[in-house]
Structures are given as structure tokens and as C-alpha cells.
Image (cartoon, rainbow, N blue to C red; front, side, top):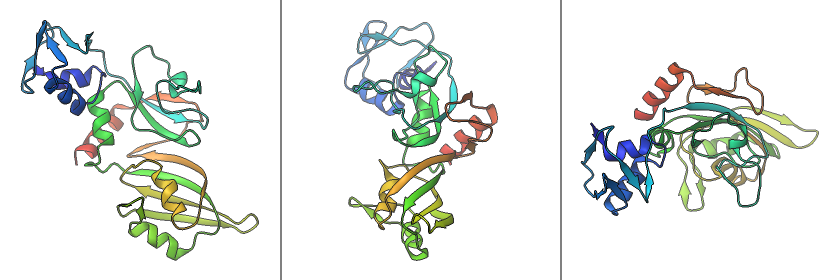
Length: 238
């Protein structure tokens, strides 16, 4: 027997936190009976319905996508733009773990495991995200230190991070750098560099935890390796 909210999350319907909200809001039925107790446990024989949809327990899948620019990190788009699902070879209902901007490339995890997705994206956890950044202007050492110490963007102070491998291109007045953060606010990396006067021209996430782009080309997708999944879970729970 397993807790009801865990079963809902494992189905890929939503995160465990959202499942708990649905239960307490009276949106979940087990064998035709409304259930609002979070401690409720169910078996494989029980029929679980959420918002009139029967929950099925799919086998979990975990993919690593080298997301190209020009794709939105959603399962559908109201403007008709290409989504990352156009690159995923499965009929299972999967979704991205977090997001990368339309014009950003790099490592993106895709799964149907709501619990794992929540573990990777929760602000409580500290999974490193490493980006390569190209920006306007020449990034000075003091500006790097300001960002690394934590910088206020839109009334929020970012957590300490690290910046390395800064290279100048004096011909076109641009810089490239590597930044490693342990959080993931909306447009965070872009806003951090814009705050010190260096708008981002190009952004690529080259690492998420221990997962890298090694051996991959843009648009490539592969299954997450068992040891990668194990270590990501350990990082998420640390």
C-alpha cells in the first residue's frame, strides 16, 4: 500500500504537493468515495480518480534532452511554436523538469515522475546548474564578484554562486563566462548579468547535477542512466 498523494504524483498527473492540495480540496475519489485525508493509503486494485480522470500507473521514464533554441519547454503552446515534446520519442505523458527559455539551449530533463520532478525543482534542494553565457560588454572582475556574492533582482537576492572561465572578445565588445548556481528563478541568469550592465546574448545549460551534454548534439535525447538517476535523487535529498 502507498500513500494516495504519492500514487497520484507517480502517475505523472502532478507533483506530490499539488496532489495533496487536490486531496484536501475534495478533488480526489477512491473507488467512488471522496477522500480528503492525506494519510490515506491505496493498493494497485483501488481505482483513483482526480478531477474525473482515472489515474493510471505508468512505468516511469527519465530522459535527458539537449534542447535546441527555438523550442518552448512546455507540453503545448498557444502560439503554435514547437515544443520539447516534438523531440521526445514516447507516447507516455511526459513533461519537462523545470524550464529553459525559448532562446536557451542545453540540458533538460523530461519525465512522467511527478515526485522526481518536484525533487529536482524544489527551492529547498541544491542541485547545481552550470551555464555558459555570452554577454554584451567586458565583464570585469568586480562585477563577477558582485554576482557571485548574491545580487538583488526584482526585490530578491540571489544565493551565492560561482563564475569562472571569463574570456573577453575585444573585437566585438563581448564576454563569455561559466556560471554555476543552485537555484532556478525565472530568467535568473539573464537578470543577474543584466543587473551589472551585461545583457545576455546567448545562454546554454551545460550541466544539471552530474548530467552533462557529453556526446550529445542539439536535439539529441537519451535515457537517463541508472547511476545518474540515483545520484540526482541523492543530491535532491541532501
